[in-house]
Length: 451
Image 1 (cartoon, rainbow, N blue to C red):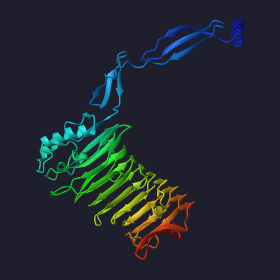
Image 2: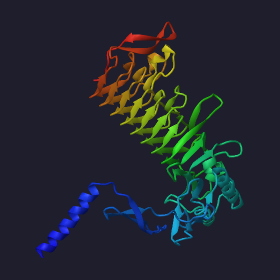
Image 3: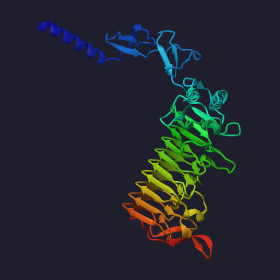
Image 4: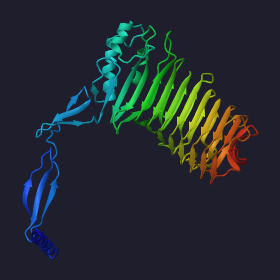
């Protein structure tokens, strides 16, 4: 037995020595061809030493036809069988629009936003859904499939790939199918709209979203529009500005929300009635650089709740809270290369976070970095503005900016704590001030109040 073991060991040693003494020349001795279901295998052998090795061969691609994809309107995906293995293959939607919440269209994929609008608008018109007369509850139920406990209907636009949704004379109130579509009587209304990204390449090119105005009794106090998980581009308007414009007229309030969105351009909100704006985990990268990423304005009497949280702002003036009734919070956001992005030194009074009007404004846990002008600017009565509310500034990081803070003697309440300032002038600010009844811009002594 020991002799046999010795012989085997000797043979292996000889083979190893032989292999070490020459460069193996491999020759294919057998092949198992791959399929689209399994890998193949190739066996090779060295004639000199008798050594063998095995190589894997990658699976073949499934045998699919470019025009063989069929739309599965149950699972909302494209599918076709492989002609070699009969296994069903699937492909995500790359481009198109889906509209949910209106009967008969839940599982339909439209090629474009314009096509979806035209088809559904015709459906609403033919079913009494665009008139000013009240619909019976049963008729309302026959049109809308997503109705909440208050009797308000919701429609969801799902965007795949890049879509253009530009409101014009042919498509007024695009997302809400016109002002008449908001009123159906009996306390039931179509007043909620959502736009969501259906895939990673989802992008919406749009300009304005206006909401209907309330001249009927019984309409809800607030509409609701939401954007989520989508990239948004803006179009240039007549003033040469790129914007995403949210507006509402007369007495209808609105709640607007943006979550996980990437926005090129700037968001401008002007609402005459009570409204809320919630912006969370979004990225703003201005195209022109000379506008605020977010600018909110509106009625001097209607309440406004503004929340900006976890956002990133690049290449813009920053954020402007500019409504007398605003209860605003700017929390955990980052501002990079913002403020004065022009060559005009007079614009160094710009504030990355500008408080023009408001009741209570909280600026908490933000980072303001590499910005030109004032990191935080209170634009108030002595600067020809009107902020007289309460400003709380705490736990912010301000670094490598021109100036930390400017308020130049305004009458308002400031509470500050825990702010970290470096590479930034805290003794001076570039202020907009009144001299002899005229507005002038000058660098002035200003002890920082951001403790």
